[in-house]
Amino acid sequence: MKKTIQDLIEISTYAGDRVDYTQGGGGNTSVKKDGVMLIKASGYRLVDITKKTAFVAVDKEKIENYYQSVDLAVKKDYEKESAEISKSSVIAMDGIETLRPSVEVGFHAILKKYVIHTHSVYANIITCSVEGEAIAEKLFSDKDFGYIFMPYINPGFELTLAMKTKIENYVKEKGKFPEVIFMKNHGLVVTADYIERVKAINTDVNETIRKYFDIEDTFRSVELEEIDGGYRSNTKTIVEFVSKNGLTKALLDEKPLYPDQLVYLNNILAFSPETMTVKDKTVEYKVDLKKATTLEETLFAYLFVIESIKNAGLIVSIMNEKEVDFINNWEAEKYRRSVK
Ligand SMILES: [Zn+2]
Image (tube, rainbow, N blue to C red; front, side, top):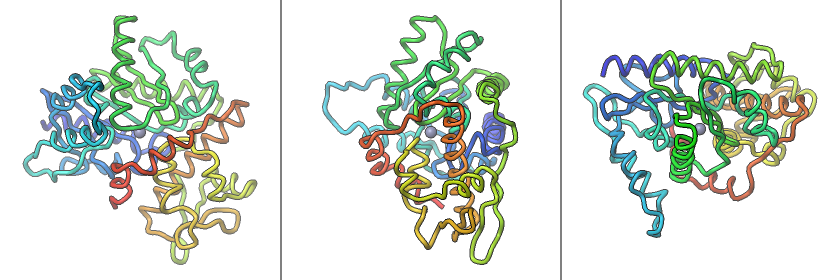
């Protein structure tokens, strides 16, 4: 297992230490070995993963078999049942804290050995615009990896099942497994059987989109300045946007782009005078550094995606009311928000 843990740390550091790929506790990674899957634990950042914590081992076959055998003709609460399967699939490991697996554990279980799932800002220009699917076809149909483009589907049980069907159809048609999955209004999944390949494909997808939209390659981290009782944003993308347009909760609510925006930014922390305010043409956070970083990174990504779509002359595609309600009421997400 030592090598598998090392691999998980490697792909998590690769995807997790840059804000254009990963924001806050968003995104997750996994590695499979002999029927066991190591996956990021819920509520942690990718870069929190060490030899001892922030990941969990699960019985991969148990989860996979569940999705294989599920019979939708029987009416029941599949969301709840699948969450219980995930929970009961956890395998205790010596010397490693037993945590709850990522809420996205279901789709990890049905993919190849290595999985990198991020809410990359480049991928999300594609997934959050009306023209995105056509642009993906233009950019990726000649690559040596296959890809699929998933419509927006509620995260959890439904998403895993829909992904499974879409992959099976792709394999039947093309005779190979799609190593890239774009998820509408959500993000990017890259999966491969070799560690170098999963990283190379992930880089290729992001760089191809970045260059296509002629975006400079400078978005590695956010800049927070410590002030009396909190932190002030000095991140260029945020300061430029707020100076020009201001920023209100209404503006964020009006254009819900993807679940992590709702979970981290719109719901509990944002724009109450106690936590986050607009002041001197930027944003100030009155929370601890960890929370301020999560808010700042999520806000950065959101504004970056919205502005890039606008600059490219594309049409923003937003989540509908029902989709927003599902996220706001999702039990697993409530848990994620409560993790410090
Ligand atoms: Zn996600």
